Image (cartoon, rainbow, N blue to C red; front, side, top):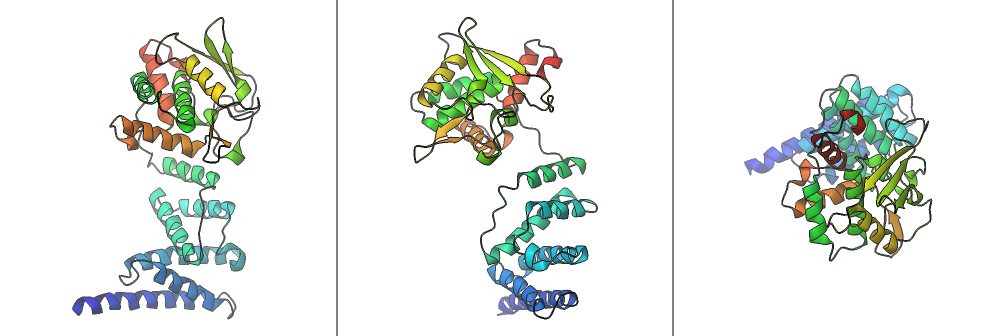
Length: 330
Protein backbone atom coordinates (compact mmCIF):
# COMPACT_ATOMS: atom_id res chain seq x y z
CA UNK A 1 0.00 0.00 0.00
CA UNK A 2 2.83 2.40 0.87
CA UNK A 3 4.51 1.53 -2.43
CA UNK A 4 1.29 2.27 -4.33
CA UNK A 5 0.82 5.67 -2.72
CA UNK A 6 4.47 6.53 -3.35
CA UNK A 7 4.12 5.80 -7.06
CA UNK A 8 0.81 7.67 -7.21
CA UNK A 9 2.37 10.71 -5.54
CA UNK A 10 5.14 10.80 -8.14
CA UNK A 11 2.57 10.50 -10.89
CA UNK A 12 0.60 13.45 -9.51
CA UNK A 13 3.80 15.45 -9.17
CA UNK A 14 4.50 14.83 -12.84
CA UNK A 15 0.98 15.92 -13.77
CA UNK A 16 1.49 19.07 -11.69
CA UNK A 17 4.70 19.70 -13.59
CA UNK A 18 2.88 19.39 -16.90
CA UNK A 19 0.12 21.66 -15.64
CA UNK A 20 2.72 24.29 -14.74
CA UNK A 21 4.17 23.94 -18.22
CA UNK A 22 0.71 24.43 -19.65
CA UNK A 23 0.21 27.64 -17.65
CA UNK A 24 3.61 28.93 -18.73
CA UNK A 25 3.11 28.28 -22.44
CA UNK A 26 -0.55 29.33 -22.53
CA UNK A 27 0.54 32.93 -22.00
CA UNK A 28 2.08 32.94 -25.49
CA UNK A 29 -0.54 31.12 -27.55
CA UNK A 30 -4.26 31.39 -28.11
CA UNK A 31 -6.73 29.67 -25.80
CA UNK A 32 -7.66 27.23 -28.56
CA UNK A 33 -4.08 26.00 -28.88
CA UNK A 34 -3.01 26.03 -25.25
CA UNK A 35 -4.98 22.92 -24.15
CA UNK A 36 -3.29 20.95 -26.91
CA UNK A 37 0.05 21.51 -25.20
CA UNK A 38 -1.22 20.00 -21.98
CA UNK A 39 -2.74 17.10 -23.91
CA UNK A 40 0.62 16.67 -25.62
CA UNK A 41 2.36 16.14 -22.30
CA UNK A 42 -0.33 13.97 -20.74
CA UNK A 43 -0.50 11.65 -23.75
CA UNK A 44 3.26 11.20 -23.66
CA UNK A 45 3.02 10.47 -19.93
CA UNK A 46 0.46 7.75 -20.58
CA UNK A 47 2.54 6.44 -23.48
CA UNK A 48 5.57 5.91 -21.24
CA UNK A 49 5.92 2.43 -19.79
CA UNK A 50 7.19 4.07 -16.60
CA UNK A 51 4.42 6.66 -16.41
CA UNK A 52 3.49 5.92 -12.81
CA UNK A 53 7.08 6.24 -11.69
CA UNK A 54 7.10 9.78 -13.01
CA UNK A 55 10.85 10.13 -13.50
CA UNK A 56 11.02 9.02 -17.13
CA UNK A 57 7.86 10.88 -18.11
CA UNK A 58 9.03 14.05 -16.40
CA UNK A 59 12.40 13.83 -18.15
CA UNK A 60 10.86 13.51 -21.61
CA UNK A 61 8.23 16.14 -20.85
CA UNK A 62 11.04 18.49 -19.91
CA UNK A 63 12.71 17.89 -23.29
CA UNK A 64 9.48 18.64 -25.15
CA UNK A 65 8.76 21.71 -23.04
CA UNK A 66 12.23 23.13 -23.69
CA UNK A 67 11.73 22.59 -27.42
CA UNK A 68 8.32 24.32 -27.36
CA UNK A 69 9.76 27.29 -25.48
CA UNK A 70 12.54 27.56 -28.07
CA UNK A 71 9.96 27.58 -30.87
CA UNK A 72 8.03 30.35 -29.14
CA UNK A 73 11.20 32.39 -28.54
CA UNK A 74 12.05 32.11 -32.25
CA UNK A 75 8.54 33.10 -33.27
CA UNK A 76 7.95 29.85 -35.14
CA UNK A 77 4.41 28.50 -35.61
CA UNK A 78 3.68 25.60 -33.28
CA UNK A 79 1.17 24.00 -35.63
CA UNK A 80 3.80 23.55 -38.35
CA UNK A 81 6.96 22.91 -36.31
CA UNK A 82 5.64 20.95 -33.37
CA UNK A 83 4.62 17.46 -34.44
CA UNK A 84 6.65 17.23 -37.65
CA UNK A 85 9.98 19.04 -37.23
CA UNK A 86 12.09 19.14 -40.38
CA UNK A 87 15.75 18.18 -40.44
CA UNK A 88 16.77 21.81 -40.84
CA UNK A 89 14.72 22.82 -37.81
CA UNK A 90 16.30 20.09 -35.68
CA UNK A 91 19.74 21.20 -36.87
CA UNK A 92 19.00 24.75 -35.77
CA UNK A 93 17.76 23.48 -32.41
CA UNK A 94 20.89 21.34 -31.95
CA UNK A 95 23.10 24.33 -32.79
CA UNK A 96 21.24 26.40 -30.21
CA UNK A 97 21.75 23.72 -27.55
CA UNK A 98 25.43 23.33 -28.45
CA UNK A 99 26.17 26.81 -27.13
CA UNK A 100 25.64 25.69 -23.53
CA UNK A 101 25.06 21.92 -23.50
CA UNK A 102 27.32 18.92 -23.84
CA UNK A 103 27.01 16.47 -26.71
CA UNK A 104 25.38 13.86 -24.46
CA UNK A 105 22.83 16.39 -23.21
CA UNK A 106 21.90 17.34 -26.77
CA UNK A 107 21.52 13.68 -27.68
CA UNK A 108 19.28 13.10 -24.67
CA UNK A 109 17.19 16.19 -25.45
CA UNK A 110 16.55 15.02 -29.01
CA UNK A 111 15.85 11.48 -27.83
CA UNK A 112 13.33 12.80 -25.32
CA UNK A 113 11.66 14.95 -27.96
CA UNK A 114 11.48 12.00 -30.35
CA UNK A 115 9.97 9.80 -27.65
CA UNK A 116 7.43 12.50 -26.84
CA UNK A 117 6.39 12.89 -30.48
CA UNK A 118 6.00 9.13 -30.68
CA UNK A 119 2.81 9.36 -28.66
CA UNK A 120 1.13 10.86 -31.75
CA UNK A 121 2.43 8.32 -34.25
CA UNK A 122 5.59 6.81 -35.72
CA UNK A 123 8.63 9.10 -35.84
CA UNK A 124 11.37 8.29 -38.34
CA UNK A 125 14.52 10.42 -38.32
CA UNK A 126 16.74 7.73 -39.86
CA UNK A 127 17.03 9.71 -43.10
CA UNK A 128 18.29 12.85 -41.35
CA UNK A 129 21.92 12.28 -42.34
CA UNK A 130 22.88 15.96 -42.07
CA UNK A 131 21.64 16.04 -38.49
CA UNK A 132 23.65 12.92 -37.68
CA UNK A 133 26.78 14.50 -39.12
CA UNK A 134 26.15 17.66 -37.13
CA UNK A 135 25.81 15.69 -33.89
CA UNK A 136 29.09 13.90 -34.62
CA UNK A 137 30.76 17.26 -35.19
CA UNK A 138 29.38 18.60 -31.93
CA UNK A 139 30.69 15.54 -30.13
CA UNK A 140 34.17 16.11 -31.53
CA UNK A 141 34.19 19.83 -30.76
CA UNK A 142 32.96 19.28 -27.23
CA UNK A 143 35.80 16.87 -26.59
CA UNK A 144 33.79 13.65 -26.46
CA UNK A 145 35.22 11.84 -29.46
CA UNK A 146 34.03 8.40 -30.34
CA UNK A 147 36.14 5.40 -29.51
CA UNK A 148 38.74 4.54 -32.13
CA UNK A 149 37.73 1.40 -33.99
CA UNK A 150 40.05 -1.54 -34.55
CA UNK A 151 41.34 -2.30 -38.07
CA UNK A 152 40.15 -5.11 -40.33
CA UNK A 153 43.25 -7.18 -41.08
CA UNK A 154 44.16 -9.38 -44.04
CA UNK A 155 43.89 -12.41 -41.78
CA UNK A 156 40.29 -11.52 -40.99
CA UNK A 157 39.47 -11.14 -44.69
CA UNK A 158 41.00 -14.53 -45.41
CA UNK A 159 38.99 -16.19 -42.64
CA UNK A 160 35.77 -14.69 -43.98
CA UNK A 161 36.45 -15.85 -47.53
CA UNK A 162 37.27 -19.39 -46.40
CA UNK A 163 34.16 -19.58 -44.21
CA UNK A 164 31.64 -18.02 -46.56
CA UNK A 165 32.69 -18.67 -50.15
CA UNK A 166 30.83 -21.99 -50.36
CA UNK A 167 27.45 -20.71 -49.24
CA UNK A 168 27.23 -16.94 -49.51
CA UNK A 169 24.15 -15.26 -50.89
CA UNK A 170 23.95 -12.09 -52.97
CA UNK A 171 24.26 -9.74 -49.99
CA UNK A 172 27.22 -11.54 -48.45
CA UNK A 173 29.02 -11.72 -51.80
CA UNK A 174 28.55 -7.97 -52.28
CA UNK A 175 29.59 -7.24 -48.71
CA UNK A 176 32.72 -9.38 -48.95
CA UNK A 177 33.90 -7.64 -52.12
CA UNK A 178 33.25 -4.23 -50.51
CA UNK A 179 35.37 -5.24 -47.52
CA UNK A 180 38.20 -6.58 -49.68
CA UNK A 181 38.32 -3.53 -51.96
CA UNK A 182 37.94 -1.22 -48.95
CA UNK A 183 40.98 -2.75 -47.24
CA UNK A 184 43.16 -3.20 -50.33
CA UNK A 185 42.31 0.28 -51.63
CA UNK A 186 42.34 1.98 -48.18
CA UNK A 187 39.00 3.56 -49.10
CA UNK A 188 36.58 5.52 -46.99
CA UNK A 189 32.99 4.36 -46.80
CA UNK A 190 31.84 7.49 -48.67
CA UNK A 191 33.82 6.29 -51.70
CA UNK A 192 32.49 2.76 -51.49
CA UNK A 193 28.77 3.22 -50.88
CA UNK A 194 26.19 6.05 -50.60
CA UNK A 195 24.37 7.03 -47.42
CA UNK A 196 21.12 5.84 -49.01
CA UNK A 197 19.73 5.04 -52.44
CA UNK A 198 18.51 8.62 -52.83
CA UNK A 199 21.93 10.07 -51.92
CA UNK A 200 23.89 8.22 -54.60
CA UNK A 201 26.11 10.55 -56.65
CA UNK A 202 28.10 9.24 -59.59
CA UNK A 203 30.93 11.73 -59.13
CA UNK A 204 31.43 10.77 -55.48
CA UNK A 205 30.50 7.12 -55.10
CA UNK A 206 31.91 4.16 -56.95
CA UNK A 207 30.05 3.15 -60.11
CA UNK A 208 30.23 -0.07 -62.09
CA UNK A 209 32.33 1.65 -64.79
CA UNK A 210 34.81 2.94 -62.19
CA UNK A 211 36.19 -0.55 -61.54
CA UNK A 212 37.92 -2.11 -64.53
CA UNK A 213 39.92 -5.33 -64.80
CA UNK A 214 43.38 -4.85 -66.36
CA UNK A 215 44.44 -8.28 -67.73
CA UNK A 216 48.09 -7.44 -68.40
CA UNK A 217 48.55 -6.45 -64.76
CA UNK A 218 46.04 -8.90 -63.31
CA UNK A 219 44.71 -6.02 -61.25
CA UNK A 220 41.62 -3.88 -60.74
CA UNK A 221 41.76 -0.23 -61.71
CA UNK A 222 39.67 1.97 -59.40
CA UNK A 223 38.85 5.55 -60.41
CA UNK A 224 37.80 8.10 -57.78
CA UNK A 225 36.77 11.67 -58.57
CA UNK A 226 35.66 13.15 -55.26
CA UNK A 227 37.19 12.18 -51.92
CA UNK A 228 38.08 13.88 -48.66
CA UNK A 229 41.32 15.08 -50.28
CA UNK A 230 39.71 15.84 -53.68
CA UNK A 231 36.64 17.84 -52.72
CA UNK A 232 36.58 19.92 -55.93
CA UNK A 233 37.06 17.04 -58.40
CA UNK A 234 40.18 18.75 -59.72
CA UNK A 235 41.58 15.43 -60.93
CA UNK A 236 40.95 11.71 -60.95
CA UNK A 237 42.53 9.50 -58.32
CA UNK A 238 43.46 6.06 -59.68
CA UNK A 239 44.15 3.07 -57.44
CA UNK A 240 45.32 -0.36 -58.57
CA UNK A 241 44.32 -3.39 -56.53
CA UNK A 242 46.56 -6.25 -57.55
CA UNK A 243 45.23 -9.79 -57.59
CA UNK A 244 46.95 -13.04 -56.71
CA UNK A 245 46.15 -15.95 -59.02
CA UNK A 246 45.27 -19.15 -57.22
CA UNK A 247 45.23 -17.56 -53.75
CA UNK A 248 42.08 -17.85 -51.60
CA UNK A 249 42.08 -14.09 -51.04
CA UNK A 250 42.17 -12.87 -54.64
CA UNK A 251 40.40 -9.52 -55.24
CA UNK A 252 40.29 -10.10 -59.00
CA UNK A 253 38.57 -13.48 -58.67
CA UNK A 254 36.07 -12.08 -56.18
CA UNK A 255 35.38 -9.17 -58.53
CA UNK A 256 34.82 -11.39 -61.56
CA UNK A 257 32.44 -13.67 -59.66
CA UNK A 258 30.49 -10.71 -58.30
CA UNK A 259 30.12 -8.96 -61.68
CA UNK A 260 28.98 -12.16 -63.36
CA UNK A 261 26.28 -12.70 -60.73
CA UNK A 262 25.14 -9.05 -60.61
CA UNK A 263 24.92 -7.50 -64.11
CA UNK A 264 24.18 -3.77 -64.03
CA UNK A 265 24.47 -0.60 -66.09
CA UNK A 266 27.83 1.24 -66.17
CA UNK A 267 26.45 4.19 -64.20
CA UNK A 268 24.78 2.11 -61.48
CA UNK A 269 26.29 1.90 -57.99
CA UNK A 270 29.07 -0.64 -57.99
CA UNK A 271 28.08 -2.48 -54.82
CA UNK A 272 24.57 -3.86 -55.28
CA UNK A 273 22.84 -7.01 -54.09
CA UNK A 274 19.51 -8.69 -54.68
CA UNK A 275 16.82 -8.08 -52.09
CA UNK A 276 14.05 -10.45 -51.07
CA UNK A 277 12.12 -9.47 -54.21
CA UNK A 278 15.09 -10.25 -56.46
CA UNK A 279 15.64 -6.60 -57.43
CA UNK A 280 19.13 -5.12 -57.20
CA UNK A 281 19.53 -2.51 -54.48
CA UNK A 282 22.65 -0.56 -53.50
CA UNK A 283 24.68 -1.29 -50.41
CA UNK A 284 24.49 1.77 -48.12
CA UNK A 285 26.27 3.17 -45.07
CA UNK A 286 24.04 1.29 -42.66
CA UNK A 287 24.24 -1.92 -44.67
CA UNK A 288 28.02 -1.79 -44.79
CA UNK A 289 28.37 -0.98 -41.08
CA UNK A 290 25.96 -3.68 -39.93
CA UNK A 291 27.50 -6.17 -42.35
CA UNK A 292 31.00 -5.55 -40.99
CA UNK A 293 29.75 -6.16 -37.46
CA UNK A 294 28.05 -9.39 -38.53
CA UNK A 295 31.25 -10.66 -40.13
CA UNK A 296 33.30 -9.69 -37.08
CA UNK A 297 30.90 -11.62 -34.85
CA UNK A 298 31.54 -14.75 -36.95
CA UNK A 299 35.16 -14.66 -35.76
CA UNK A 300 34.16 -14.44 -32.10
CA UNK A 301 35.32 -10.82 -31.78
CA UNK A 302 33.48 -7.87 -30.24
CA UNK A 303 31.45 -6.16 -33.02
CA UNK A 304 31.33 -2.88 -31.09
CA UNK A 305 35.09 -2.53 -31.63
CA UNK A 306 34.71 -2.39 -35.42
CA UNK A 307 32.96 -0.16 -37.96
CA UNK A 308 33.04 0.55 -41.68
CA UNK A 309 36.08 2.81 -41.18
CA UNK A 310 37.92 -0.26 -39.89
CA UNK A 311 38.39 -1.21 -43.56
CA UNK A 312 40.46 1.88 -44.32
CA UNK A 313 42.31 1.60 -41.01
CA UNK A 314 43.19 -2.01 -41.78
CA UNK A 315 44.53 -1.21 -45.23
CA UNK A 316 46.53 1.79 -44.02
CA UNK A 317 47.95 -0.12 -41.04
CA UNK A 318 49.04 -2.98 -43.27
CA UNK A 319 50.61 -0.62 -45.80
CA UNK A 320 52.56 1.25 -43.12
CA UNK A 321 53.76 -2.02 -41.61
CA UNK A 322 55.05 -3.01 -45.07
CA UNK A 323 57.15 0.16 -45.30
CA UNK A 324 54.87 2.40 -47.37
CA UNK A 325 55.36 6.12 -46.71
CA UNK A 326 52.53 7.70 -44.66
CA UNK A 327 51.93 10.22 -47.46
CA UNK A 328 50.44 7.51 -49.69
CA UNK A 329 47.88 6.42 -47.10
CA UNK A 330 46.15 9.80 -46.88
